[in-house]
Amino acid sequence: MILALESSCDETAVALFDPARGLAGEWVHSQIALHERHGGVVPDLATREHLRHFGPLLERAKAMPEFAQVSHVAVTNGPGLAACLAIGVASAKAVALAKRLPVVGVNHLRGHVWSPFIALHAEARGEFAARLDELLPHLGLIVSGGNTLLFALDARRRVTVLSSTRDDAAGEALDKGAKLLGLGYPGGPLIERQAQSGRPDAYDFPRGIGRRDELDFSFSGVKTSLRYLIEKLSPAEVQARLPDLCASYQQAVIDALVRKARVALERGGDGFRSLGLSGGVANNRLLRATLETEAKRSGIPFLAAQPQHTGDNAGMIAFAAWADPAGTERTAGFDLRVEPSAGLA
Image (cartoon, rainbow, N blue to C red; front, side, top):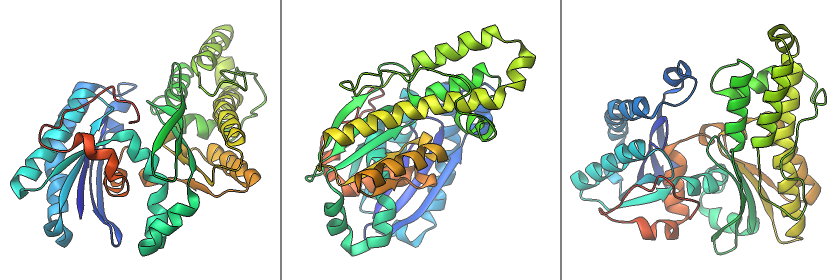
């Protein structure tokens, strides 16, 4: 039984994971309403909220009968906001000391790597290892506000980063685009809502790095293009064209993501046996549908993280600690430190 804590940004989260039957409980305190007033995450406020809410969430976990069976504690130790990570790591160490349990650090991005497989475990249970073997090697796309990258998960469960973003992450580009359009925060869902009644071909925004020999992403160009376009329009014109602007902007971001995933699949030949999507932007319905089409075209299964496991959550941290213990070997023990700038390692 694994107790997991997550506090890399603005979500305070706790989870209990039982390898025999899956997630026994998940508890999350979201700070979206607080940071919405400021147009984005304010680190000092996020840290204060983690201090306020880890205690109550842990009390809820302690009320579960499974809590008595906890064998070790897992906690996100990076990447993320340093002070926020520090609250989670300190809380995890405190629980581990009190219960005389080992504590391990889990890379937040490894949590996203494994999040699409949580549903498979819930379905397969004792046959999970065999079902997983059928899906490896796996090509995964992580798309969030802070990270955008393609990775390969090989048959030995080793992770290799194939590409990342050279500037803004896709989620960051959506949030900044929404801010330019006066929509508020968080921007991705607001743009998606407006885009439903707009034309995705109304405006031709750049698709990042177009060369087929280049897998890296870039989203600064689409954001700059939107800003220049808005400067040419009056506020009334922006409002009148808002659905078309959002639909075209969203399409440009999604096209850039899907094109690179397609190239990676083609380069892999018959090597990849599944395609996965995770991270906060994975909730975008158009992105999910388009990537699922790519997977079908390649004749492989598509695995997308469940909505509750796309954002910052402790369920994926617990699951990663169990499914990928090799990923925690370097970060085990009470000398565990936060690594705010850590990559996928």
